[in-house]
Length: 80
Image (cartoon, rainbow, N blue to C red; front, side, top):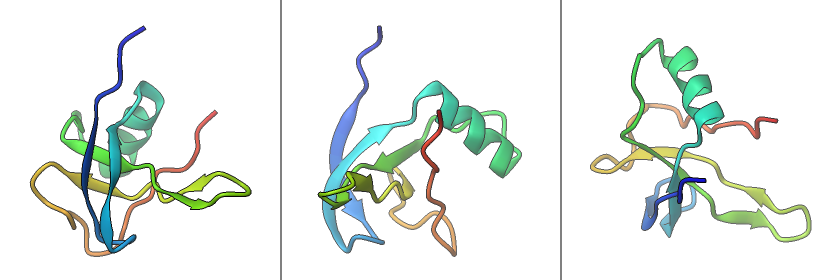
């Protein structure tokens, strides 16, 4: 099993530095379909927990160099 890379970076929907991780395979496939692109390796997912009771995460996307790559936020759904 591959180790998932994480980093702390600014999330513009949370308004602060938060932990981000690279997308897993299912999330990458979802985003490729959503954006109509063949590669999405530059995207990072905010894993800030917004609700401690439910464990709901922010899940906003950013790239390594762009904290706001989309006019409206794209949040990756939880995929089974």
